[in-house]
Length: 525
View 1 (cartoon, one colour):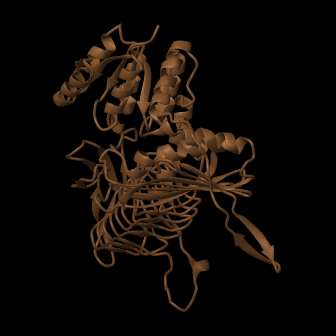
View 2: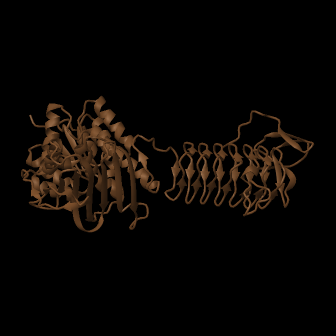
């Protein structure tokens, strides 16, 4: 008995799924929030329609759903469908986060649901033939693969060109080589929307020695969908824009003449392919999997492998083209794409690093810190948790900031007492320690060798040349002790025993020292 399938989305690509599933006799319903899209489905196929996704999920007569909604909705729609007991086909990409893909794969396995991803090239006659030729050794040892997927539009706002176009080529390359890359690098350009890449070039390196390059763009003046596979014996060219010459083998070779390599060109051999629509074969595979309960070729695990490659490429893009190893854990901190983070840094969870920062090798930054624009953290610097460093601050080697320290805009640290451009004095660096909760005002200068006590407060523009006691308020040039400040940041007024008017903490002041009388008080972060 054939299953009943509902298609979610009758837009740019969804209408092709509607047509295919209708032709295969399994289309039960079309769901879309656009009434004109529903009118179109009814007019062409006489199928039932609805605008409520919840109605589809609650309909026990519907066995499966095919999701062709915007990519940002794939994860939630697929998850709700699986939890409602439906088998699911979802257009590429499976989701926009690898972690979401892992969750979908796990839920589908736990609930014994079919979860299939629309990686259509794995059902294309040319790719299937290439898989056969590679398996038979027709091309010899594969050396590299180059693919290009270019067009004019359709521009996206939910995902960039990498996530929109590249899943097709990544899926096909992984299928043909039957291995995952060990590392990737990616670069790109944003020209329409500064936050959305319009063109990207990704390079994948495989343990077998194969290298693959994937170029995608939606700003190309004409359509191009080509994959070139270069082997030691032959080169295969798959051009999906061609009507009759989609797959050609070129037995080009390199001869050695007078001890010099000479490229010899031969006529290409057109490979005949069956006249089968890839989408129809893909839809047939989904139906077959629903009936037999055998996972499809492009199941959730295959979709997850593609997501992992995409995720690594995205991290390389954001890291200005740095190599990213597959399996490398994604950072748990945020770094603006313009920030430079050298290898060998430790950065805690929840930390935010903003525009044009440079974090140097060997530095350690704690959890939930915030580094403003144009901040430099030099080698071996230690920064605690919840530290806030405002714009245009350089923290030099020899400086240590404990938890909850605040550094105001353009304040200055030093690490050498008498610097000269022509004399190297790295061996003379002096340690500067800023203890927990201390605040340093804008444009202040901390001369190296000083220790700023717990919850001390340096006024804006002050020049600190000596140690500052706990809770001490210093100001002036050079800075002198001018009073005391509570852990909450409010100035303390009075002498001897003082109670903060703002938070009620009690302090004892004597002999140029200040200490909190209730040591168990909790300071808000």
